[in-house]
Structures are given as structure tokens and as C-alpha cells.
Length: 261
Image (cartoon, rainbow, N blue to C red; front, side, top):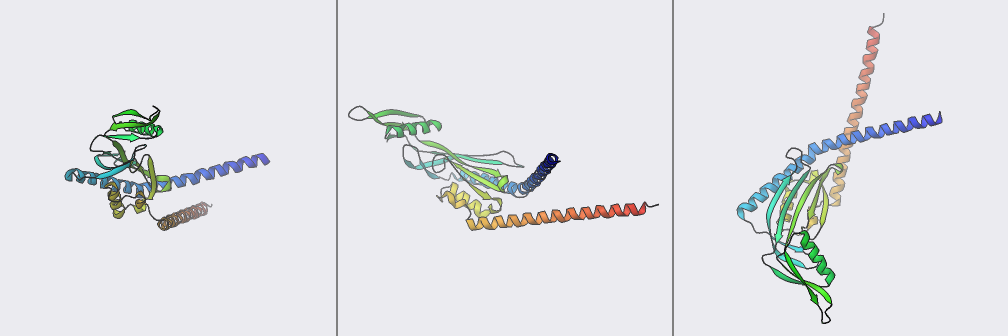
């Protein structure tokens, strides 16, 4: 009987885990539809109106970018905004893309050679047309690379529904420097103030990416509220389940009473 009991216990534990996972998935689905989805649509509407106004006003946005191997280049012109959304009913991904470009062609002397190689590789990923040639010392050793081009970089922000963490993950790509940076924002925090900060960040009015993050104290308060709400829902489900069991027991007793001969 020992092995049989072990199997029964494992089966019961597995069933319990599946039930718990199923309940959690239902909770997360409700969080998405009641909160995250609304916040994603709010972000999309804000971005759409922002880009429309930028187009009407031809508002100049000046950006800077630290090109690998070259240097930080200021006075780049930020243009060609494009917004995509995977669904207008249940969005999971919103992308805002744009280009940051120099106004004229320039020659950059990049040293050492490894930095020149790094620069050329990055420019190739951005499809920048460039001409390069070796810089040599008096002994004809290659010590660097001269690169002639009109610099530009493709940049943007992605907003992803982070359902498992009950929020939205914002990912910047080539926004301030090469590569991606990301942070998580709870859907509770997506309000007019948050959107205004986002707009100022996109327009380079505020230079810090971290400005969009909420404080640790705010995170604790939000987690506390979410946990309290979850406990209330669980308690309500438990009470409802107990009432259903009591109700079924009462009906069974009444049925037996009225069927006595």
C-alpha cells in the first residue's frame, strides 16, 4: 500500500497545483481585461495624438546618441514617427519608432582600430552608407579608421503587456545609447501624469529614463493593494463555495424527507 499511497498523494498534489494555476490564470486574465488592456489603449491613444500634433506643427525635436566607437553626437534631428499596435481590441504590443539623423555628412577619425571596427559594425546594422579607410602611423601600422558618413540611428519604444507581473513593460531601443533598456510599470500608475512624463521623455524635454519609474514606496503600496484585493476575492470565493455546499446539503436532506414512504 505504500507505493500506492505515494502515487495517490502525488496525483492529489498535481491536481491541486493545476487547480491553483488555473485560478491564477483566471485572476491574471481578469487583471488584463480590467486593467492592463485599458492602460495599453490609453498609451496608444496618447502616442497617436502626440505624433499627429508633431506632424501638424512640424515640431523640431533635437536628440543625442552615443555611437559605438565614435562619440556622443548632439543635434540629431528626430523625425519619421511610426506607431504600430497588434490589436485595437486586446493589445499586447505597441511600438513607437523614429529616426535620429545628423544634418550633414562628416568624417570621424576613430582610434584604435578595434573602436573603428566596432563603429563600422554598428553603422552597418543601421544601414548607414559610409566610406572607411585605415589610419596608419609613421611605421604604416593600422592604428585606427576614418569613417565618412551622414549618421543616423533607428530608435523607439515598445510597450508590452506584462500580464504575469500585472503591468506593462516599457522597452527603449537605441533611445539614449545602443541596445535596449526596460522597466516595469504597474497598470495602476498609467494616468495623465505618467503619460505627460512619457511625452516629455519622447520629446527630449526630460533626459532621464528613470523618470518614468515609480518609487519603491509606491511599489510597496501597490503590491499591498493588489494583495489585499486578491485576498478579498479568495475569501469571497471560499464563502460562495461554502454556501453552495451548504445549499446542496440542505436540498439533499429536503429531498430525502419528502421522498420518505
